[in-house]
Image (cartoon, rainbow, N blue to C red; front, side, top):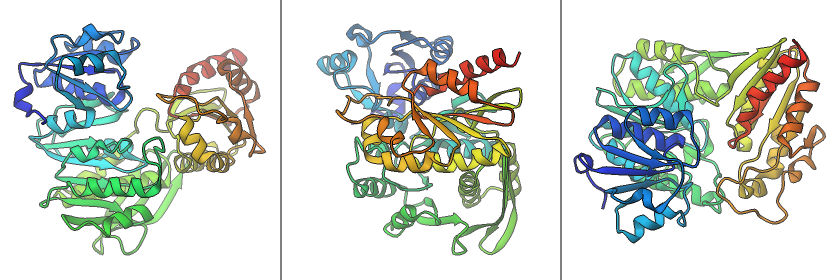
Length: 461
């Protein structure tokens, strides 16, 4: 049984893998409540250093002795059941919570809004937090990425609202029981956990069933999976958004620019204003529409919500411009599913203008590559040149016969380059002014962006 928030006060909570995007946010909020926090991670990082400064005791190793004396242990789906700390917690009969269960405890005394969907969760939840701040409220939030303006992925606010990114990857988002929820889209992914599209659909149906009967579900009318979900929801009110004219909030007069976008918003037949974004892509207009509709349904002013959205500058690793050298722009993005890659490359193509689009892509997980290698090849073909690194395994064991070569063999513009150094050297040598270089993937490919910028500086002193 989950503890209450009050039960955690005066006790020590240990986070296995505390440096991760989601776990670090929970630790930060726990510390703000005065909860004693310890944790472990495999490496030092700026996140670990920041948590130490807030009072967390963090070990850079996974060792059974780290959990001794802990009252509760929190772990994420990235942690193996064979992790020595997990095994020790089991042996000592210490209560163990999933990341989702721990988050549900931390937001249990708030009016929570869970942002779910196969794609767009981090950006949409970040937009929602920023838009609500512009309305004069101070929401708490726990997000799987860093909001560019604040430099943080979590915050304990003074207001009653708690915005939480709801990760569906292991089905644990059914722990949240939110007041309201946003579902941006529903599509097959996380094939290591969901063997079939129907399993994904069932997970989202179970999640939607936990929404408060006094609350509501905001969903995208343009997405087939989200519409199918809405058709079976009967426990709460529904609110839809999209360019579909049947939506409760309709977008029209859409304008897509190199590093921005705008559209008119019509709510129940009445124009409430124009969404103006500093981030590119049609998908981000839809994300903003979800935020605007949710805010309006909560009773906030359209003017304030739109003002907040206009100030949103993005989140870390979501089309994040890392630098420009000699007219060559380097961008980093987290996209790791074929659909995400397609919308990202379309936005990148507009950003490139007359220049070329050069991509270094790192597939994430063997199981995803095996399931979608044909779709990866098709989406990556939207670029001019693609260097494909070897698969980032995450926590998976290698699947015999599955390699990034499966993708490049289906491409005319793709090349398999497993060596990081060789890939960066090739991309630096081929780049010309006006080109855009995009590092793409959910693994450690993001580490190449500063190396590429350094190489460009040396090539064009």
